[in-house]
Image 1 (cartoon, helix red, strand yellow):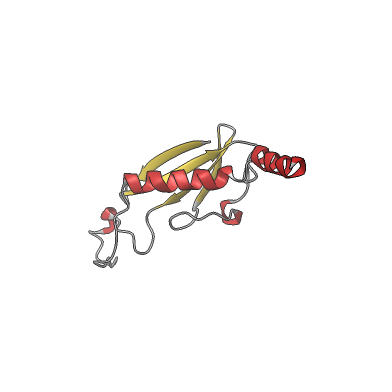
Image 2 (cartoon, rainbow, N blue to C red):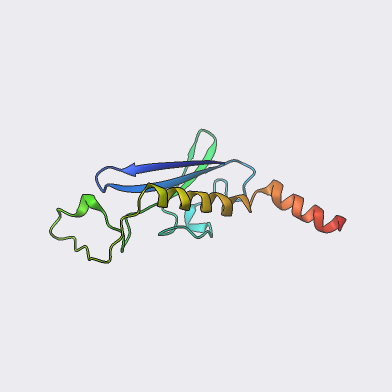
Length: 117
C-alpha cells in the first residue's frame, strides 16, 4: 500500500491518494462502494501500474479553495478552512489504515486466529 498526495492547480487544493494491492478487498471496487471515513468522502478510483488507487480532495463545501477566491459567483465564508498538506497526509494515513483492515491476508489471519484459539 502506498500513500500519495497531490495538488489540484486550478483549485489550489490538496488531494490524497492511497494505492491498494490485489490482496485488498477494495481492489478494483468503485470508490462509491467503499465504506471508509475520509475527508469529503472518496472522489477518485482508478487502476495505475496494477494497483487500485483511491483518493479524496479538499475542495468541498466548508473547504477554503484559494483558486476560487477571485471568482465572484463563488461565495466563501469566514468559516471555510484551508486543508493543508499535513492534514492530507494524516487523512491518507487514516485511509491506508482503514483499507489495511480489508486486506485478504489480514482477514484470513484473523479467522485462523479465532479457529486456533
